[in-house]
Image (cartoon, rainbow, N blue to C red):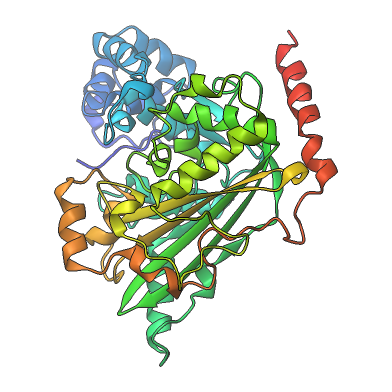
Amino acid sequence: MNRISLQSADMPATNKLAIRPKPSGLLGPFRILDLPPELVLEILSFLDPPYVILFSLTCKAARHLISSSDYGKFCLSYVQKKLRDCRQEPIGSESILDPRYKFLQLLADDYLHRFVCLRCAKLHQNLTGESRNAHDNSIIIRDRLNPHPKGVMTFGPLWPKYVITFDEAREALKGSRKSSRTKSLLSNLAISTDWKLARLWSSCYNPEFLHGYIKLDTEATVVNGSLYFHKVQRILLQPEKVKHFLSASQSWLTEEIFKSCIHSGQFRYAFQPPLSTFSWASLDKTSVHRTISEFIAMAHWKMMVAEPSRLDGWDLDQLDLQSYSLAGCYQCATDFSITIHNHGRGGVEIIADVFQNLGDCTNPTDREWEACWFNQFDKVYRSTMLRRLDHPMIHLAIFPTPPGRSARNHPSAPSVKDVWELHEHDRAASRKASKP
């Protein structure tokens, strides 16, 4: 059965026996609510609860009809159930299949400046105050409704304006094949933003309204007919905010900010020991500088290297890196590492380098692409694919931007004064939220 669009309450009547006389003066096709209530409820019984609730939001009459029927009451109670507590869920959990989350995500499709918060199961304004454009929004809606989605690569609530589709990736890959170079940079998949101020999560996560400067850089290249993607996301914080920011990663805060595939994030496991098992009480009486040094060491211990990254990135000639030493998704070919640079009064820069093998992009249902951006996948796939294909992290040197490279000297980088004024942004946001 084809899905019924609930964005509008208009529907042409095709069964003449079900048509009731129209009030005088009305022209055009019959509305669905002109049908007998029992027939409308019969139609709605074929829909999942989130779509029934969307229908009830179209007008007061639809709301009254749904709330007065047994199936409508069931749908209302089913969707109103709270999301399970994500902090207690294991890696690979399926919380995103919760009916309330699905319902809110459908609403977010129509609200370009909103995203769904996994913590409180509510809609929040995008953290940068920006929104998707109409073109990107239509692509996202199309691929979510398509039973065979082509895939939409998004970059989380900090970057609502950016999206890369499967069609764009495929065309870029086709164009690169016309080149005689073995390694060709795909400029149309490259994104490089300026530093900008952002709120780093919704108020339900951050009573202190944590602010920081953020920057996104992406690049892609082709090796042996496969598309490899590198994403670098940077966050520049005030030094005393680093512990507060990282401690929130015990739940879903930084997981969602740094999320790079549809599966559960692995940010907290990019440290050794993992942030989820780290003894935070041990830092209660530790100085800010010592705390930052501890996190820097935890990040490079995870990668089993002797020294942390330099400001210009890891020395790839000297780096003897094993694939199992990196954090990554257990359900797809996504791997990443965390680098931390202490710039003193200029702030603390946290860098997340993400590497993915997106395959040959010949079919949107190919495992390499689909596993990264759509659907839950079996855990066996990751180990099977790594035996069959070169591991993405083996090809660190194929990208122009080395992992761990600082962008503190970028032309748009905030000044020391800007960094230390972050306190004022926190206070202003707190005052605004506390007003009745």
